[in-house]
Image 1 (cartoon, rainbow over the protein chains, first blue to last red):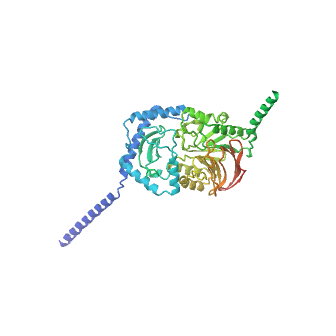
Image 2: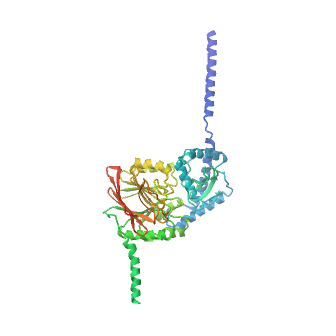
Length: 199
Length: 296
């Protein structure tokens, strides 16, 4: 009887120990949750939705193969941009770069910037000097007379990978999401990038 | 009256003969060699670009190159159909008529949609590789060096065997010009170039001609002065082998076996640099460069 009682008590203690261990593990798991994961997953979902939309519109125009006719390339880009603008007439800044993911991106970009050697920082600032003052607008054509600054190759792998047809660009302190073929600004994020002008 | 006519005719003759007389070909024209021209930052549509196009056509009569690599900034400013006429097809009409192939890389002034423009032979790709004889070219988009492109480049370099390996792209990894080298790009590309035995690299962006001292066994050329010019922009220093920054320029290149001959030529047809790069057949990384330095 005593033996059974003792065995019962020790089983009881063991049960509590297991339960505490499970709880502790659970708490540990909660601590390890990446707070950036949800905003990034949401951003990826929004980008995918945009790409699905623009691909549907692009398919309606027909595939763009290599052509000798620049007029054909120009017409296709303009038609695609026009159709996207119509479909996204209500689109506004922050639809894809939501405030939540913008905070994550700004942190990533500033951290990367702080690791740059001075020589790299100077080259990047020189490139931005080639660009005139430019305030992007959603659904605006990226001005064809402006150069596209080289995107920092060490920063690209830190940002979520984009599907085909969209790309990141930096203009002054803006991070821009650009539809490559339509040459259209899909969304932008101000004060994303530290510059000499806007620290 | 007849004396005046003779004087006028004489003047015309001298004017006609000057550009022709300036053309001294310094390349050996060996049988079965790979022959090409190099131009960069051409797409202005101004008189200087047309003069370079004319000089290329004249040189081609002596050195029948079959293709031309373009180092980016192929079309500056607006990219309407009429801009492609004025900034590309008209200046290079003689070459296009002669079926010379153009192989373009994208510059920071180029709309990536240029990859669909058939005369640029990009096959709809921002980056690509192609082979001519024993030479493997890697056309890199230095504006947007994403992880996919880096992975592609490494795979292609690894697979390219013992061919001459020549990457070309817009932004220079080394330069003495005022805007300076692309240090960040260099930190990614150079280790791959060294690892896989790249021989020669061509870049534009800086509107000058430069041949730099080989860096880690690789010969770098800057040839971004084929229409735009940054006069006096280069600085003589430890990197410098030869520079030309007082007029527009282009290059002619001939590769035969393990020798690469080059000639840099001004808009007026004057040779501003020439030389030969030799590599050891069994060790593609080991190279030696010898360049004759004519007076500037």
